[in-house]
Length: 253
Image (cartoon, rainbow, N blue to C red; front, top):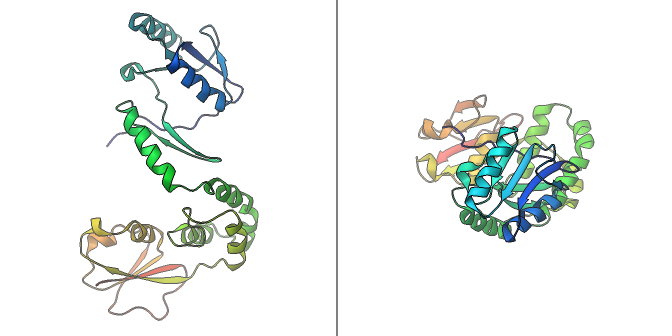
């Protein structure tokens, strides 16, 4: 499956962006560009991006054609077929930015999804990201190996983990670091043989696991959700010594 668009986060601070048009649509785009620190410019500016918010169809089409002839990437408000790029609905948890796009298919759908996610994602998410960035040196010192750091962070950020993004705060990072560990065994009792019945948490654990211990009745379709390099061991009971890293013991309930 191909992507209709490649999502990108572009730094616009201090850079010119052409904005053409007036009225409510243009004002909304102006506010967004100002939040990003862009220098809002007229058509004559040497810019890589332009937003055309001209209501008149003929005038808008001519402006888009002129800009594209110069190699400028254009967003034409409410005219997705003319767009080189679209502007997503945005959830801002600085420095975490979550963008929701539909390729111009439905701005209303993107807005509805944003509103739903706004109620789920805590305001503390940005502080957590900043704290994790600040802890990189300490984490490297404690866990020099990249694989060890990845496993430790994966376990901490998993649902219910010490740094669960939906519940942890910035101070959680400082209290987690001294007790960082990599070795644990998690038991998953499957409710069915259908991989679509896996919970989000179970799917994440499969993606993180270094070792899989499983009974014979666990289907390959579920085991294939794990990392390709995860060691798989057929067994009848939970292992006494599962080894280093994250190990899963899987059986049908």
